[in-house]
Image (cartoon, rainbow, N blue to C red; front, side, top):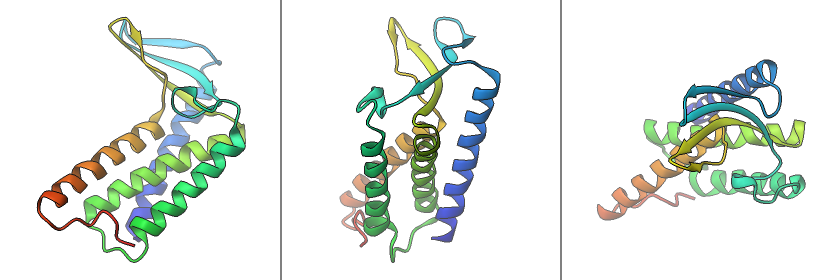
Length: 158
């Protein structure tokens, strides 16, 4: 489990470093076009969760985060024998969660900056921590499905 927390720490450091650079180089609302009509770096402050849900409810979002981390620890990490890939997956998940948690706790908002247009749809702006959370959850689902098909489901290890 030590490797899980080391990986979480690395993800957290990378996330916070990128966000620091964004806040030092851009002002809120400023965009830099990377790929015209597709990808920009745009500095926004998200006071909610994904798609700005629960905007302005920082206490609620902080409590939900603490509950989520406790559940992840109790259900998946405590007393578990994780493979190296599982350690990376849970480390990425926790690092992403803590990255956004720190933003909410210290700033009252999450720093988002990855801005994509897909056709005429402007996808909600997100950040590195969000990527780590989504990828981790996808891998957890894939592993859960794979293990379920083979009859050795370890989804709940607690």
